[in-house]
Length: 570
Ligand code: 9MR
Ligand code: ZN
Image 1 (cartoon, protein in one colour):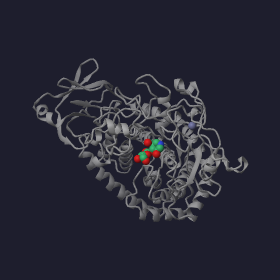
Image 2 (cartoon, protein in one colour; image 1 turned 30 degrees about the vertical axis):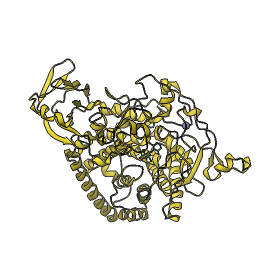
Image 3 (cartoon, helix red, strand yellow; image 1 turned 90 degrees about the vertical axis):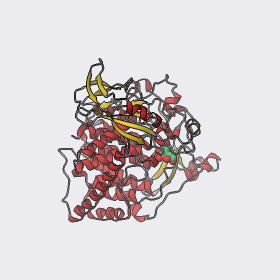
Image 4 (cartoon, protein in one colour; image 1 turned 135 degrees about the vertical axis):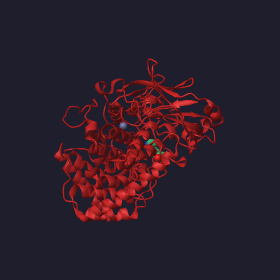
């Protein structure tokens, strides 16, 4: 039996729940105990006694679940939940929990930086040497290069540097980068007050919010991924993943893999969005980003077909896709929002009509970002924000259609959430590789819906998704390193593995991929997790388990969005 709490804690005025779970065979015994749950302060004084709320069997975890609601406690402090002889991990109630979480989540991106030395003033004991600065070659010339079949001077070499390592590997992938930047730039656009803290990075103090400084590091790399003709390379990696060595010791040849239409469209969208966001701080960069976006948009228009070649000889991340409608929709929508030119809106609408459910926020389907662009002025909490241009009837129409879809999806997901004993808006079949991204995507969707239609249920739904991430899940872990009394601490991250840190030590602020019921191809996960384990429990905190416990930039980024929402939205 276990009592699960949000190990980070709870905001004073939001919904607070804990979950008491046991194996189904103990449920009768548990129901017979008439004890109430007690919410106690650190010194043992109990503030509140609450009846357990029986939920019953929870399919995703296989547990029999009771819930404890203690929303009425609003006093700041450190608490535990007790029931019978069980005690939860301690947690806090405080107004700034999500501000602090956001700093950690954002600073983790600094630790992903490639192509520069991380020095002690910013990286502390995780300081490390520079990496991946040697020239890159094209995949089409790579074999010849290796076999010395091409004279040195006829090779095309590219000096591409910087960006964030994607994950526990050292690759850099355009669509993954766009996904992370989309979450973060919109988090900043909608909730700028959540980003006033210093991240203690080399650019700190330059008058630009640090979150934008950090994103700029990725944007500058992305700009280099644009080819002469306006297409954009899909990825920039070695042929195979490096071993578990420090990035500076990964000296394998870097390669540029061929463009994909998703990469081009994502590039257009990200640059058009960045152009708007950075304009008040750096007009030169804003112009450059927009020019780059338009150049790639011209390529997209000239190449209306879906383009993606899965190159199986290259063993790094695939980031394959089956459709580029969502990316093209996002690109057109961002260009419309940045330039005000009507034809982009029409183009975006034409892709919208072709998309069955354009409200996704993951790397494979980023259609929801187009919705954020469409509704930007309605979603932002930035008091100084002024939407340029007038609202045409075509746009008005589009907004009505989009909002109806969003509302429908949010209501459907509320039902999914209500059918989970743990309050997570994930169906049993949705615990796949990176399930925490799906959880956080739902958090972002609820948050977006709440801003348009402030029903308390949507707000609480955002809280519940973060509760899941931070400890109210059947694994007993907080899925953010360094956050909570029992946070996972063995991420699949080459840097922390190669550094041979002490037991339990790790760089804070990383989000784990989370439970993965599909068991996939990961040998240790398969060995350690018995067949038939309920999906929410398919997790082990072992660094070898790449399909469970890797970290990525786009698992941190939606957490940044949700944390910023909870920090600012009342
Ligand atoms: O996050 C990706 C996940 O959704 C996919 O199922 C998985 C297999 O294709 O790949 C994940 O992405 C990995 C990427 O390919 C390479 N860098 C690490 C990423 C996280 O595991
Ligand atoms: Zn690197």
